[in-house]
Length: 344
Image (spheres, helix red, strand yellow):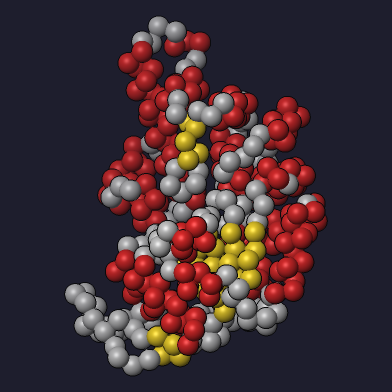
């Protein structure tokens, strides 16, 4: 989420919701210190925004703020990403590279999805938390850093530690201040202002007119459970801005509300009957005699175009990043952009 959007979203949450005002009181108390904070809650509730608020409210606000997604990289890459490496440490290490902890020196490092961190790296992270020192891959020399650590998870680390799936000693090192972020369904009073802020932001981002939602859609937003929380709301509003219509929203939320959706690894929601609903969206009155095979083909093409557009938008049209998100090659992405006539 862009930094310029975090502040107004947080302000709206803190102003509108009693539960988030309680979160703000903890942030205000803890931010000026160097205490390690564990932020936890469901996927998409805004844990990263809270971590950023802790940094902004601290004496380190002018110093680096570095985020690491612990679930995005395999063991070998995550270790070198966190702690850096020396030239020759492994094949392809043609020169030394500082890690994220060095980059965050005197500032804050945000360890997102820390519950996904492999056990071998947890031992090295524990050393950093205890001694504020570590060594790069391929080096015996210790480096000292002055870093404030904020970690986030959507898992119960205490239960993982009890099952020996997470180091118990690391859990207690991270869990100095435990900050729970309530789900969006527990703070529905925020939804109207969040909706307006997100519509305005994405209308500017995609250079579209800001849509005016009907009262029926607002009513649906208030009664829907939002299993994907703020992230799900943002994704839905982005689609409304890009497509220029809200006609499909009622049907989609009703389907989701009937439990016909499954959570993806990223915490977003994917409807089980998406091809059927996509077919319904692209079929017109003139298509009554089109035939099932052609209807399904058109629906698949429309769904692919929408997914490409969504991934490119979320990656801010960084095509290498979009290809990674879509799990296709860069060359395939370029071909599909041309095939669908997508234009930044």
